[in-house]
Picture (tube, rainbow, N blue to C red):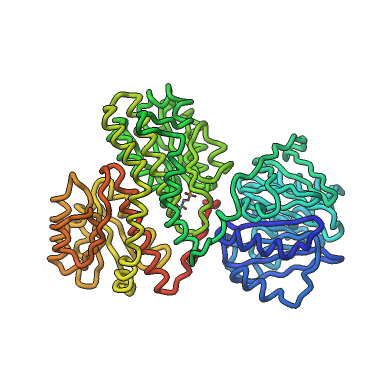
Length: 612
Ligand code: F6R
């Protein structure tokens, strides 16, 4: 949450900062700001989107070849001009942008207030920039030393960039708990929360590690040190992503583009990891720790939001195929409830961003108790990927729409491969069944393409239902987590209240809500529980609910009862979530667009939740 960007070099900084902030806007979009050095320090900040900042800065002096920028997701203090970053120290000498939370900011603020400092904002960031100023003054040290000493006093998480009004030749960046990438150009440097603002200018990057800082200068020199003041040799990596992957490519929204990318990313997620004709699966992380994984007495999935939903599907998969018990935990609860974790447990930490604070904290708890942590992340080089003992990347490519779509599908694919590989190694499934599923997985991108062809029909359904105040989503077995996911998608982007339920659970409460106003989306593709779902649909219809049924092609019984029917291709039951989720993503998308909501940047949300 919050995106930071900075530039130093020969070019004008402002256009680079603005473009970078637009790319990072998915991380937070309630206010934005820039600070530029050009003889003096010029700071422009505004509540609202980056486009509001641009309008505000029009006609003002935005010259300068060094600058910092920020797009905010509010933690301390409401989103307004005053609380927007960058924040400037009392002397006016230092400006700072920050992503994260300074937990001991209240105590530090009190100390600084007692020393005569005043504060214009309600933020923890303004405390930090003044702390740096105070340390510099009291200890009579360089800005680098002051930043290092100040950060050693700070409890919490941060990625920061600091500039000095009296020195246009360098800037300082540091991180702990929040991501930061340094792009290395030809006598120029780019800094950002992720690589998307950098990719256009250079492919050479260094991902700063926790408790590290860097001093970069205009002459093209940079030094990385730990907060303990020990210089370290930087590891320069080549970025794998390309510019195309972070642009809309003709789609109206990133979310729609990402929904349509699912056939391709699912093929990418399985590439080189399985062969149906040869009957093998090879997830590197599972191979590396095969002994421990195959002997595990229990898997514990920990994740948040959509990733938690894919984890629930993982529970069904691993228990059914590999016959090992699985628990699925919200990371935010798991970390605080003193959970029982054994050394023989495997912790599956699932996260698109790889930066979710709660999931990271849950991993720490698991590692303290010697469990093996297996990360399933999308963002390469992310914190969760780095702190896990083993793992598999989902290879979905950058997901920019705040609502997760292709990340979910690829997580489910990895969990499917994992469950199958463990089951094969343990001998809990037959080779013929394994091949059958693998062939179907190879075919799945085509079936998703076919499901995507239903888009126009789903748009018509959306038109009919867009004014509903509530929605219910029902599913059984593998489709129950999909019902939860469908409800989450709808509520987060269209702001319609929605709930997902196991279909049979409806009669224990939610059935009271059903009347002629209530759309009920029923996932009715299950072979094993088809008759039961038929009964659930009847129960809804008997109370005049509006049934939108997702069924297999050729279905007759449910088709005759439902108000709207979406017919999708049939697949192996364990793979159904990968198809049933598609119409739900499209339905939410169209309803949100029709209601005029900002689909890619829903209110109050941010793409990576790096605060507790
Ligand atoms: C919903 C959504 C969120 C995330 C959750 C976890 O569409 O995107 O619920 O799934 O914040 O994020 P990651 O997967 O990055 O850990």
